[in-house]
Every structure is written in C-alpha cells, then in structure tokens.
Image (cartoon, rainbow, N blue to C red; front, side):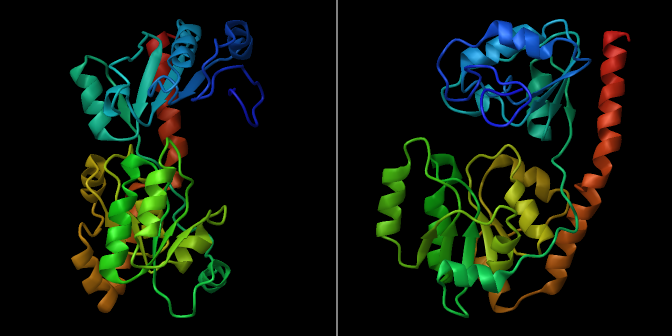
Length: 303
C-alpha cells in the first residue's frame, strides 16, 4: 500500500509531500484481512502529519511491525510525535534510536540494514567514459541527494583537498538547488551532477573513493555499500557512523587520512571492510531475524 507509484493498493494523500486529507476508507479497505501490518517509516518521520496519524489510527488494535529509519525529534521542526499500541513491535535501524525510544518508555529492537555481501561488479571504465572523464581522472563519489543535511559543501571540499573530480548522484530537493548552483559555480575541481546507474555498481566501480559527509543519516547505506564494493570511505559527523564504525569498519574521518591511503593504497583495509560487512550486515541473516520479530509479535498479541 502506498500513496503513489507501484503498489497493490493506492490510497490518496499518503505521500510525504501530499497535503490533502488521507482516504480513511481506502486505508481500512487496504488493511482488511491483513494478518500483520508493516509500517515503513510513515509513523516514524511525520513529513505528512495527516498521513502518519491516519495510518497510526488505522493500525490501532492490529498486529503491526513499525520499521523506523528516523524519528520525528531527530529532524528540526517535526516535533515529538510518536504513536504506540500494545499490539505493535517497534524496529529501529540503529541503537541510537532504540535508546531514545527506551528513554520514552517504548521498547524496540535494533535491526541494522542488511546487504548482499557479493554484489555483481560494475564497469568502472565504461561509467567514467559515460561521464565524460578522461582516462586516469580520479573521482570522488557522493551517492546522495543534494539537501542540507547531506552536506554537499563538505563533500566538494574533500574533493578539492584531494584533487579529485566530484560526482554527486542525487537530485537537489527541499529548496537546495540555489545553494547547489552556488557551490558548483565556485568549485575548483570538475563537478558532475547526474544520476548513477540504477544498480550503483558502475558508480562504485568508477569511484576512487566514496564520501558520505552527512550531518545526519538514519543509517548511511552508501558507506557500507562502498565498503562491499571495495572502495575507501570518508564519512562525516553523523552520529550513527560511530555505531557502524564500532562494528569494525575502518573508515576515514578526514581528507588527510584518505589522501595517505590514495597515495599508498592498502588492499588489506578494503578486504577488512568487506569482511566486517559480511560478518555483521549480511542479507543472509535477515530471514531468521524477521522470523524472530514475527514470533515476538505473536507473543505480544497472544496469538
């Protein structure tokens, strides 16, 4: 069920940027007969408060798993809203959010995002050619949208410090286009702003390094994906990065450290990061994790 796009049931005004009244009848019809409801962040981050409240109301009394990527108070201006119900199990993607919920008297389970440990390789040479980069040009990839919290300025500054071309893959959103235009106009390295291949394998293969300079991420998938694809990673100050680094990732926290690596590459570091992802964040563990969550939900509802 969704507000738009491809879904078995479309319910009007459920989109993040919709501002109409959600179709309560449509919601009830879509949930009718469901044994379990899974709410994917809509009751976590109320970008569309009416939709968040309508979905929470429709799930009351139903067994539900609420999957939380971000929480309202983690974003400026979204307040402190959070719904709960005795028949729900809350699942966070990081321990930071789980701890914040516990402080509010709401138990939750952390399930870190999971990844395919051996993805298909991409064609880096072909990707660089498609980008119009000369052979041998070194490239820093920022695989994010262009919005304030993604800290494009810091990513571009890292590229300038390292003398690398800079590739930003995501669109400008949330009124950021003017700031992005200003940054690009003043850049001292080549800047590419265009979408990446759908599977991202070509983008990671083309990159000499990956930067995720965000001030906030609920998880930070690109840092893990880059590690799996064997690329060094420069991460910014977002709090959950420390949680992931604690798993064992050897990511760089400043451009100077990454510069040393690029001058003297260490295959052992890249192999180590791949191994950490395979040990702690493998997709293969997800079926067992989901089975455990469903068992917990069944115990909660007494079924």
